[in-house]
Image 1 (spheres, rainbow, N blue to C red):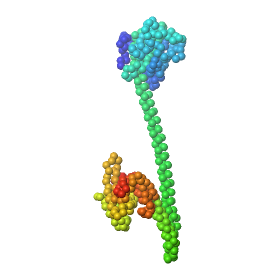
Image 2 (image 1 turned 90 degrees about the vertical axis):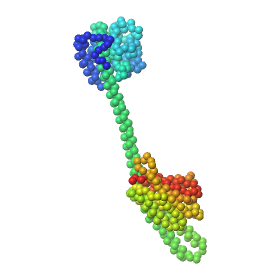
Image 3 (image 1 turned 180 degrees about the horizontal axis):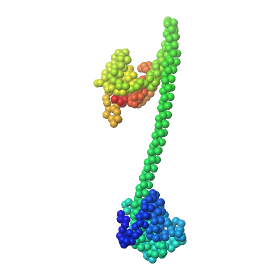
Image 4 (image 1 turned 30 degrees about the vertical axis):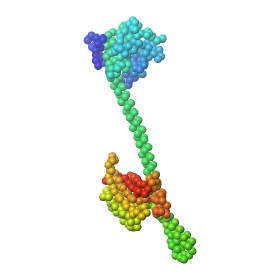
Length: 450
């Protein structure tokens, strides 16, 4: 962009040099502004100074014949424009010629009135004597505004030197406008980003508060479970122990008595035993949380061996066989809960076998290839038992939900619920795949953490 030569209005060197200080001072004043409105007003004032015009008008943000931002400067005694006409340049075809066709214009009063685009002045507007204008441009050279000066002091016409100076002022103003527009855009983006970060921070704070409330509720729930476990292991068990104790005494005294009394006694003792087993199962379920131990490296082979040792009698009674297909991995876990997990799954596999068919249980494990940051281990316990309909796949993991009556198979219906709770405590899950009469395959997926 050439600031000091106007191709349509050549200027003598000595004339340019004599007016350069004035243009330099004007440039400093324009570039010192930090807002569009400030630049527009300063340029209107400066335009009058460098051209000796009595009226100067500026506009920026041209759209549909109007400017969004503008300013005007008038000498003393010059009347204001009619309301609404200062920046309504759509009425002036000469102005539009400047915005669309030429970078600058300079007309005498007669030339202005004879111009094909001249449309006259609105009613109530004071008379104009000549007009001088220069286009303001954006970074890509597009027209973004204008500087208009009219009515030169002393009634003289504007000169080519005036046009060249105004064009140079327009070039400097365009630079200042680009800088301020970029600055305001940056400030807008910073404000938007700040608002986004503020909202995100507020959401984070709300999330943290929710987590704190959840932690408090979990702590309260754990206290209640601990209290329940204490009551269940002492206060509830004691009456049942007395019932069974007195039942034993009654049996010894009723030997040879009528069979009806003996039957009633047997039913009472059976109910007391079931209640004891029920409470014991509840205790086992609550202790997954209340008596949890820290995670340590656990060799699953050792956990499986201990579970089989605990089930030795059941294995012998059922005539079953349990075998591991290869070595099982080592994972970070609660050792006792891994033993209980195997014990519950193997116990079910040995218990729910087909009539006349010896149970066979196979245990294997594999490391899964996933996109997770830590490896996952899948433990599979597969049997050849009675199986189940997969429509009941979720139901079997609900506490005390039984698919068979007490007369068919023993148990309280909480073993698989305990397995699910153990898996979830280790950030894992348990699934089942089965068909009636074709056995069941339980998969436990746990993070290795090794």
